[in-house]
Image (cartoon, rainbow, N blue to C red; front, side, top):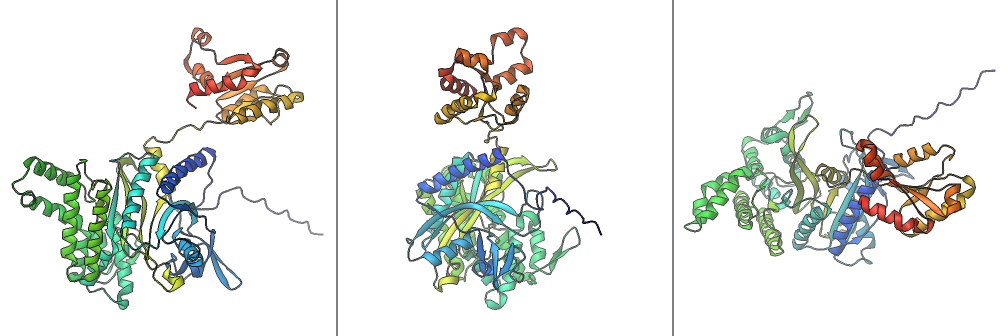
Length: 540
């Protein structure tokens, strides 16, 4: 009789493109999300938690790959319907609002936080599951809603620990880009494919540069590996129209310098000198080193004037410029300076559902990449207006706008700025010297917990006391509580300051150690008071 083969043991490994998050990482993320939620709550937004699974039909044509419903998302077929894990928080919101609109206030202001899934090729720092943190207003047609999102985003970055001057919120309008497309002869349903390629090409400006974008606007581009990306097939005249839009920041910078004397007139020469210096030092995204509002206002107005000339003859393009000017005016009225929130025509956002203002939050401080090269940290949030998304369900246009924060990116930024605690504080550990006294140890830990102190009783094998202290070190515990037969008989306890003990062990001489004891004998009734005192001294 053939021997039955043993089933192979499963591999203990995380699936490709996924990762596990442990205590300190989860705690830091939770703390940051709580800070963000507090800002959103202050702005009047309500929390919403949607299902992690949506129908592919509800996710709609904005799937990463619409022709293959199981590509781009994690999807499966069930009862002749395709279901998928949500790939963002916006598509589920559109479904929720359409489904419950009779029970929801209009406008409806909600925020949502949680994991999303993308069935895409993973890479360094790019995972198939990641956290998003969104805030959206549904049912508000006024660009005042867009201005509010930008203001709230600025407040959020500062609330979590990003300094003013270390970030910039860049604002554009899809209507302006649509106007450029119209001027370039790319209007109409028959040009939808070309418009999509143009949109994706412009969105890659930071990575590919102007010449890379030019290639994608024309016949296409071959990358270093030899792969060819199909281009939009535009002629030279059309390409130049689009590139005038792509190069708007540099052109405005040059024009601003040329027209500066005329703009300032015979006024304050000191202001003229400061503005000239700021324009010359500003990067192509409008970042400035000065906190003077008039400088940012000057550059914003120059950009709007340039865009207005660029889309002349396009009604939708002119409307887009008008909206940008209204947004900047509303933000200025609330005290959000133009050097924090700037007009930037290079912002287009890759997703196809945006219909109006779009915005990105970029962190401007310098970090070092994996090859040791200095670079700006980059984008941590983005969003915009999407007035057609709910319409798919209701048949009626429902205006909406919102922003999404990349949680892992923002956490990495805070870590790079040293705004996250490097070491997590573990629980106070009550050691076990006598298994028969477990009830007494549990009484101690209950007193500590009732006082709001994180604590636990050691539940491993108590035979080796050294292993208990090793466990406390592995848990990064600040304090160990020790009580054996003598302590119980004398109604005292030993409290060991593990943080101080570790510091003494590093460098203290014997004499110094005698003057800095790290273990204290205190009356049993002083347990909570002494633990609190030690924790306060540790800064915990």
